[in-house]
Image (cartoon, rainbow, N blue to C red; front, top):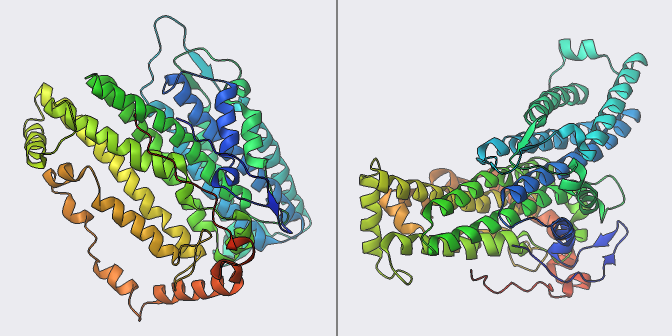
Amino acid sequence: MNESQDISPPTHNERGVIAEQYSQLQAVHVLEKARVMNPLPSASEESTSRAVLQAIEIALINLNDLTIRLTSDIQQHDFGSAVVKLSWIRGFHSVLVKLSTIMPKLGLVPLESQPPGKLCIHDSPAYQTYYASLLSLDKEIHLNMEQEQIDLRDLIHRKTLDDPQLRMFHLLRVSNHEATIWESNLQHIPLPYPVPSYAEFVVSTTMREAVYDTALKGDTYYTQFRGLHQIPEILVAEMNDHLEKAILLLRSHSFLQAYEHVMRVNVLSEPVISSVLPIAENLTTADYHNIRENLGLTSGSHSVNLHYYLFRDFYEQLWDAFCIHLLNLSEPLSQKQELQERLQCIDNNRLGEEAFLGYLFANELLRLRTFIFEGRNEHLHLPRTNIGGGTTRSLTGSPDAIQAVKRMRDAARLKDRARPLMEVRHLHASQENEAGMLMSYFESASSFDRTLLETTGSVTQERFKDVQERSGFFSQKSPFVPPERYIV
């Protein structure tokens, strides 16, 4: 399942290119090119393995970029900037640890007709450049110690996290241990089939092209913002292929094969959520404002693969196919009560062999639903931190960026296909949109969170009057056109 859109001629400002499409901003067209250059069977064990390794390659390229810039900060004794780089580095290591645990969870089984394959992370071109940059970083730190710019013993003995140098070394120490975890997990990567070289299988040159096909002048986190969107784009494209296959298999009553594909979708979803958190934790309002104009007339909701195909089309059709299979129907369900009775029967008899399979499949559907709504909730970090409240417009012109994201989330809950299963499991009450005590307080006039949002919004509106007033470049309508529903 691929996303493809025309790439418009770029517009520039003093920092660099201004994106005109989400697919251009995140180099989705370059990621698709990598699939075409080395085509593999759709939703296959080969394609799934490659997607994971390509996501790892993107993360390593970003780690290398940050490590080189960190070394430069230390050379200039700019330890405040160094702390920021290391905080981003820590975030990418967390994503890599999550990615490194995916392969054993996928349940890939060697084929009897051919010998298994094996890869090693040490053969990754991105790993090799990162390793060299890490050695250069350590040399620079030792040099600063020799020149008495850094008193490591005193820092460890007396300082806490309010000291930039100590915080820098604390983050470095944590990151280095995380590196040993993902390296150990990826040192021997068993594959159920023979593969060519690491670089050829992963299409590493095109992964690097995706990271650097656009870059901005200055010390920004534009590349990292893109990288943490590119990792989900790679994984979600593969997830969509598995969902399409699962829907077709359910319609042909191949229940067990469909289950395996949905299970793999849920395994692949884990790093997608993990990729949001480093942006939420590290991209401050000021850092985001430094790159905001270059993001152009784009929005995260313009991700065709994620927002439209996965969250909408495949999720709905998978649920419908599951329900039709359960009730042995030839067309979509109209009787909610009949469906709930069948689901309740499966739950009540789940320890029986026949019902247990339906119970397991229902669990996977709930895992998928949980991922979708967790993704919607986590995405709210970005407008809250980077745009703010108080009717602050989004880049694409929504009158209130935060409320627009909330409305999309809440509308999805109201139309949720899986509600009958949620009700049978007595999970629906916890998913209603009633405001809890914390939410009510945070939205009240006395809450500092509200002050934060309103002040952030005020700063954003003042700095980006052209966005707020829809003037200049932002007087244009976004060229993005939502795709037609993808019908399997």
